[in-house]
Image 1 (cartoon, rainbow, N blue to C red):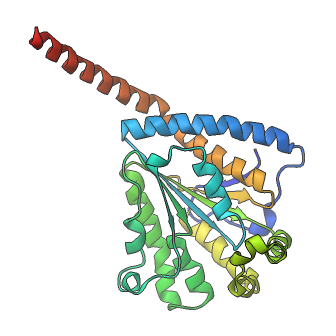
Image 2: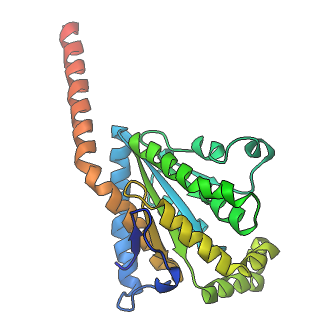
Image 3: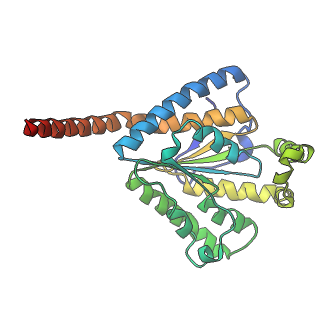
Length: 276
């Protein structure tokens, strides 16, 4: 599968050199069949995660307007049991949120042991939108890269599997999707002048994303660049990357559940013996 992973700080990131399209040889029907298999595997892995309570999973979705964050959430969450998933969309900070440090509103939404948390946008807005629109001094947002690395390391040290996805859409595909919203009355509610205004800052956002990815890529919290021009391939890449990250924990989670099961069975046997 053709996607790019950054897992070391300081790596050179050039988004223009990374394709937004799926591999030419990949057939859509095959990709959908692969996604179906991954869906079943993810459900099984999540079940072990939920029962063992040894880890949690944080999925961060970032991308330009219409890159497909909502679509990715819809399809990936569709693979999971909703009892152990919560989705948070981060918009413009409220007055209360502005009165705290920039990570305050994010930390409270981090997943508990056994759970998935999916962020639609995230703390990265504070080095993206804030930077592009000059909302705080450069000296302030520059320091945030270090705070973000420390925050994500803290989560990882306490068992959170952190996965960060940049949904990489081309200018042409974005324009097509934005125009399509105008053509269909059922999607007109999504129209937003701000999407077109932000589009005019394409190069500024590219620079902001490239530096954010470079400065915050770590082994404990890697960035995955997802070709997002084809929705079916975007969904497959996100599902595959999550499954790849969870799969190595399967044995440990199963052992934990087996040990708990043996202990519970011994308790039950002792109780029954005492009743005789």
